Length: 233
Image (cartoon, rainbow, N blue to C red; front, side, top):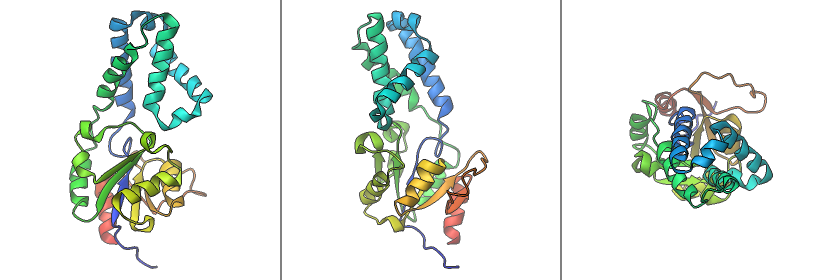
């Protein structure tokens, strides 16, 4: 078996790869709803967190272009809700400021900061994400030489173009790059279809139920395990 060389660059997904996102979103939605209760009470009287979420899903189904920018989707959903109840839709921008502050209050997994510091000694590091995380606000931007987000690029994973944009931003070829993500289809299959190697970050011990069609180059549960695998190459 031919050994693969150490990659020149490693690109990361962010949400659920470097930090858990579900509890963060839940808390951000609670804080946003509390803000609505104080500053846009008619919205809070008419809608619940769940009904606002359902309205966003309906909006996404009607306008799938919002799929590349979930922040814009949430803003549009709030504007629609404000307009329905006669609140000033201009307040939606303030509401989004509250939401984004809470949404970026993530707690990286314990292996992330030391793992990124260790990785930077060997390879270029970047990110490719469909989400709206702000690495500067989170405090991790200094670990990344380049970051590509779907909402700015105009296409989302698993589109090969966004992975190629990540490679280009770091000045490397796809076959010199490893992508690391938690989603088998968006991350692993998407990256491999663009010519990158792909690591499945499986922190929760999921079973690969798509094994017949998606085969990661490696499956790991932490950055420590990823780096150990890379060093074994």
